[in-house]
Structures are given as structure tokens and as C-alpha cells.
Length: 572
Image (cartoon, rainbow, N blue to C red; front, side, top):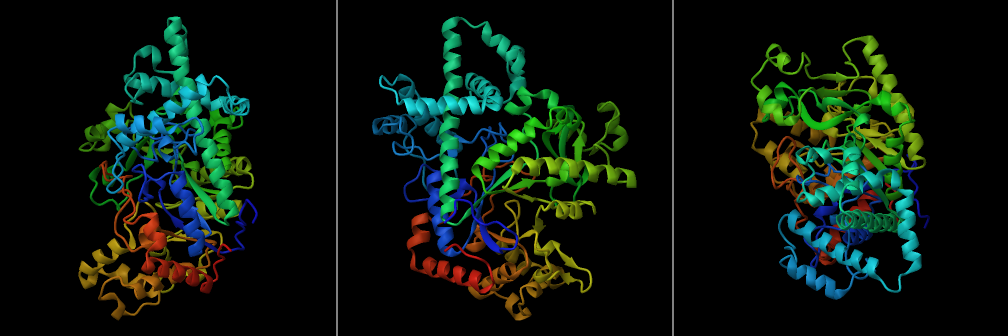
């Protein structure tokens, strides 16, 4: 079996989406990791899925959102399998000591307890690093490999380890604008570091070396996982957000790459009916807005570096909000001020922002010239991304309010977009576009991590008045269901018909969320909210149950047969 699966669009495949944190086993550390993901990949191959899609795996900050990472390159330590087998510098007595200090293992069931898990895993890695440094008979091969990793990644690792060591100094907070003024940029912080007394400076340097060690271990595990998945015939699909966090090592180390005073987001959208700010002003994500002119001066070095990191770990990747390469809706205020602007109209807002209002940048789509310029901008940037990606395939999340020039341009570049059946109308019939008419260069799915699972949607439609069930009737027609099928629960037969319609589509890749596959209604994220339930939901069954339960084993065999019957290639 080749290490790189065949990802030609000529080969129709199916995948399953699962956040790594959601994986669960009978004996884990309260969160999914690379070890559990390896076992899930084996299960996916058995079930006929040739692709496993993940959410971003970069290191997160205090909100634990994978879409608000503190680094575009550093991987989150919580994703790592940490034991003496996977981290050679660790010993069993280290594990027992750290677990005792952390109050024992986090609960296997229930939501992810991030603060406890981060404390546990970083504690284990610190023990391992201390032994790695103190080794009286060091493994020269491993020492050389660590040094080579640091040398190869110095362009981002230097800023990241500085930022991460300062976070450590300030109680784990990434909010650099609350740090002392002499530490609020990488340039200032390096000058401050040079003034430290020798002993303190050595301690700070050791902390930086520790975080470099963590990344060495992380990249090693993820690169090995990519290789083993490929050998199993399963492609690993990553996800990178368009933007980076304001509180990130990237902004901290390279502020000149971003337009100061602007926060990226999305325009007003009626979909979020329960969020008055989004209804009125849009979504203010708070991400820094790129200064493309400055980035162009060094041939987009920062972006090429970022794509190189993704290429090392994944066979294919998705760019979240790819529309932002063409133009991005931008706010002249940080999200912390949203409440201040909610009651204001445009005339009242202008004096508080120097005359500026939320707008598309570089320009809007309200003129022919603007649309042409935005299309050309996206075309240039995505050609650069494709060049950096090499043979790694790219998929663009092109949902929301999509300008008419975007999808033709993506197609011309060979970039697959999304097809969500309920959002693909057939203007000839008033129903939904048949899956057989989806363009091949696309990814079909009933929903992303931000959407309600099918079961939740089905229940909501069941409770609606008949005149409000139009979308249910359209979806039923898409799946070849009769009206009699709509009166009861989402049983196995109806569920299988929905899956079959998706898998029969002409799309290159058809993906199911794990919650849709297992007929569950838990959500991984509710957009526009900041609650403890976001990014913490775990599977209701363990991997052991998924593998050994007779009913689930029968379902697994059934999914493989369904994929074969609908013409999807399955791993051998």
C-alpha cells in the first residue's frame, strides 16, 4: 500500500469528520490523542472510509477553540499520546508522580476538562524534557534529531518559544497586551530578555528549549500518524483557518504583516437569528487582517511556511473561510467593543472609529471593478497556496454569502468547494439539486462542525408546523423518501436512505460527521456563543465499544457495503 493515498478526483471516496478531542476509549486521559486517532483510522478503513477529516490541531489558548490558535505552526500538546512508549524520555514513575500532582486522571466520560488535561500533559512532557537534558549518556541520534528540528523550524519556532515562555511567566495567559510594555512585541521582549540576570536568563532559555522539545515530539507523532494512515489506505485531512488569533505568536512576532486596527469577520447574515449583533453588524471574529502588499514583498514567506507545516502532517487540507482570500469583511474595532456598537447606527458609530465602518477589504463587491480586483487578488493568493502545497490536495470552505466569481475561480484552480444539499437549490424545480448533478470537484456533506447534526434537524422539523417543513420535504425528495417516511423518528431505514443519497452524489468526496453517522444530536460548536460545551463534546461510545459491540459491528459492515454499492472506493 503506498504511503500517499490516491486522491485523484477521478476516484470517488467517502470520509468521516471527527474532532480529535472527541475520541474516547476505556482508558484515556480525558481527551482524544494521536494514539486513539490511529485506532479510529483502522476502524474507518474497516468501515470503508478512505478519509478522516479533523478540525485544526494547532495549540489553543484560553478559549480552547481550534479556530483561535496561539500559533499557526505549533501543534497542541493535548493531541499527543504521552507515555513511556511514545515519549522515550518518560518513565512510569514520572507518570504516577504527575498524575498524583494533577489530582489523578481526568474523567473518561463527560466533556473535556481542558485546564486539568493541559496541566497533566505538560507536566509529563516537562519530566521527559528534564530527563532528556540531564541524560549522562545521551542518545546522540535523538539529540541530533532535536537540534535538526530546531534548525529547520527556526523561522517560526524562535518567535513561538519566546511567546510561549512569556505565557508561562504570566500564568498561561496569551493576552500579550496585558503583559509589561517591555514584553508586548517580540522585538521588545528579546531586548528585555538580554537584560535578565544570568541565572534568570538561563532559566528562561530552558523554558524556551522545553517548548521547542514539545513541538519536536508533536511533529514526530503527527508525521508518523500521516505515514501509517496512508499505509492503511486512509487520507488524513487537516483544517486551517484563514486567520490567526490576535493573541498569537504570529501577530506578536510579525505585526507588520497585518493591518493595524482592523479585525476580520463576516458580514451580517440572517442565519444567526438569535444573535442581534450578527444580524446588525456581522460576525467580528477578532482575527488580524493581513497586509497582503507587505506579504507580497517576500513572496508570502509566512503563508508558504504555514502551508509547509500542514503538508508535513496531512494528505489533504481544508481552508476555513477561503472567501477571505478574495476579500474579507473587516471591523474597525476589536470584539471586546461589540456591545458598545450594538445599539448604534452607522452615523453614530463613525465618530468612535475615526470615520470608518465595517467593510470588505481590500474592497467591496458593489462595483464591476471591485469584483474583478477581488477575483484577481484571490486568484494570485490561491496560486501561491497551491504552489506551497505541492502534491497535497486543497479543499476550500466556500459557504455563506459567496460572490458569483468565487466558485468558477476555485474550479479553474482545481480547488474543490463544498456542497451541502439543503443549500444547493434546483431553480428548475424549486427543490434541491440532485446529487448526480454536483460537480465532481466538490466535497458533499450534510453539515460541518458548526451545524446541527441530522438527528437534531430532523427533530426540529418534526415539531414544526406543516407550512414550515419545506426544507424537510426538499431533503426527503433529495433522498428519495416518501412523505410517509417523515412522520416518525429518524430510524435506520430513513437514515440509510439519507446516507445513500449523499454517497451516490457525483462529488469527489462525501463526508459524514461522526454524529450523523452514529445518529446523535450532540454539537461540537454553536457559532456566536462562548460556552463550556463548545469544543468539549466527546463521543458517546468508546473505541472499544465501536469495535466490539455486535450491533455496531453490523452497522460498520453495512456502511462498507453501502459505500461499495454507491461506487465509492474503499480501503482494501
